[in-house]
Length: 77
Image (cartoon, rainbow, N blue to C red; front, side, top):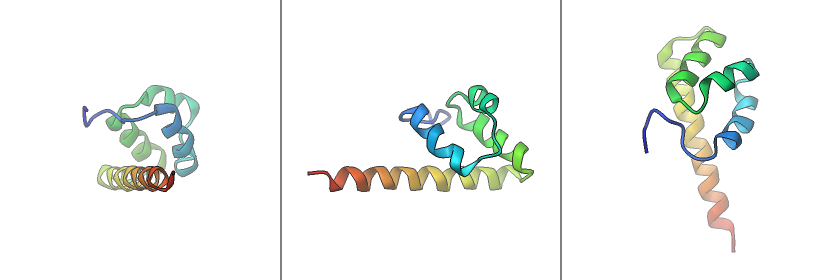
């Protein structure tokens, strides 16, 4: 998988990510279109933070999201 592209179900990712980054607009999400670099740039722009911090937030969120998915899958019979 290309590390510049957000894997998995993009619509599901956006639904959950809107809660975390509520300042991003519908237009922002359409522009991002599953591209990590675009998402990090929009987080940086909308929240007025350094790129390193925006990348840290993305990485932490993505890691948490995948851990939640693994936990959910492991608990299924």
